[in-house]
Picture 1 (spheres, helix red, strand yellow):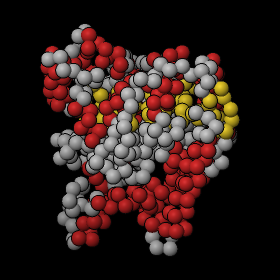
Picture 2: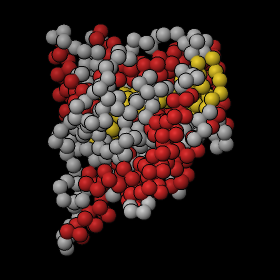
Picture 3: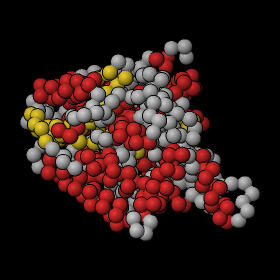
Length: 486
């Protein structure tokens, strides 16, 4: 069953052709056999998973099963999970066991899903390659010499390798969509406020958003039916009704107006990526959609604005890790100041320290207005660009990343790494939803098509992605490299 979609697995569970316990045992065995080559998991919760699977089977036997009862998945190790280590990929939280569940985890448990463990990630979600994790880099299952993308690289790799059919990720500047593209799976970043951030360890509070990662748009729609919705414990959660995201999946695309931002097809775009995106656009035209060029004139300012706003918020959010209440504490501190300094110096990795320093400088007296306030003004212009574009078209399309997955260790300087997010960051600044779907290959490495919509247009994005997946088979391809000599 490891090569099946989440939708196919739930159908098999409903038909009784496999039990949740059998499925869970099979996938745990596969993780044990193969994940040593990928490093996609930080923590495996085998005992808890088998117990939840047995409970799901009992619920189904009583005739009380829901759509996802007994379905296996994994959680990015940024979601607090009661009684389970929640490390955020950092030495700072290496031994932290959460006393409560994040809302997303709470909802998934209530739906009867079975979590097999917590997936690896860039430390505190800061990275685009999953190389900054304290627990070591994750490998791309399509090419073990390549990165899986970040920061949700562990979730993406686990799904692509068939270790789980779906996983939860988070997206602050592309951290669902870029790894989904690099690993050849489907990843949805919902509208900001659509999915609760309660219990999701904060990086940049005005940008972070949790979302599903799976093999197909239909799988993501089924997960969104569970995780979306208002949460009174999250002040940024939007009080808005949740539709059934599967209802519109089969709607035809005749008359759909697609915009191609000219800023997404210029210098720096890999020729193989451009060719795959062009071929995908032609598929949509064959489905009855029309295509026109649009402009997002402030796109060039997205990365500078993001790398002022996000580090500033990170500096504030990560100030709580001081060695006093929880997290890493240095040995034998001389005094309180020494405790603070050494605990933070030992507990945080290089990239996290870099962003804290940038953010602290940005927020300091004399620089706040010059940098942070100005970046927020630019953010408003970027948001308006998207709103103006959606007056003309229904969705925007373009590449999820400028290149296919790059080699492990290839990006030596921070700026070259940051530029990997050139097509994804603006979406978080604007708060709109975006989805990446498999759209081809460059050699053995997958390419992702990014589809964007206006606020709360997740149902439309899932419909557009699903229709594309009905006429293409990119999302059905499976890597076999990890099976070799396993």
